[in-house]
Length: 311
Ligand code: TXA
Ligand code: MG
Image (spheres, rainbow, N blue to C red):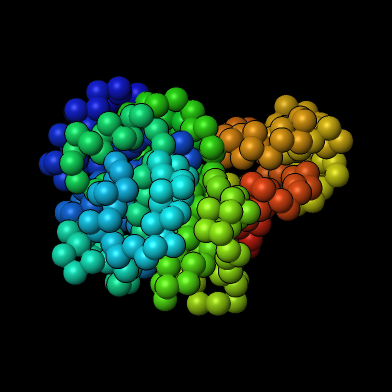
């Protein structure tokens, strides 16, 4: 059942409450019928994800999103500016919201996204209902950016793996919450903070690390590879693989971007971490990554990956 391009077959599997993996422009998603509690529970089970981590509902267009959540004028502004694209909006659920409460993990809010990928959009249109889609990796492991990554870790747990080629953006969507009317950046991602601010026409606050997590998916070691990480390393030491970046820190085969292009680095990040992990090396030294543009999302993923493990 690997590498299918049969989208109607995937839609049928969703109708039966089964799980499918689908490509998006950010990372591959582990899809289930968002309106079916059992299917949503199966997604949590397949992920091995703590059940308090709420899921994103994927829909084919903004109209479908507006039927699920209560969008303020500012939230609508971002929806129209960036959808389809790597932006997730968290808004209050409408009373008649058909999405499983389990998908919201007990919160009165819902996370919604319109992905920019023809396979995902066709699947959503044919299926006709919202699809929950966490990244298609077991909880705590690197997010998948190819169908092959999904196949390696989840192949026994999904009915269909749709192959849409490598994910172009390579990091998850930016998550913006509108919880008490005011926008809050809950997770850095594929759209830079400055672009969100341009879309809104005002500055946006970032959820503080000390604050109660609005995005509880942000467990510290959520993105961990098997190998240990050493960040801001100018060069590898004995026994380390080197994840390079830019003209001055590009030693060896695992380079995020030789020219120092942060967008290229984001697209390569998870694939290179997978590739390095596959060599069985115990430690990865990572070159310094600048803190602007998509560098924020990359540094966020890397510092989570470097955080002490609880398992
Ligand atoms: O790019 C992406 O967003 C990918 C692709 C497949 O669409 N999906 C993804 O899903 O990254 P997931 O489940 O790995 O991350 C969802 C994020 C988590 O940080 C979660 O806590 C947050 O969205 N989230 C979901 N619902 C929320 C809610 N009601 N309130 C606050 N945060 C929420
Ligand atoms: Mg994830």
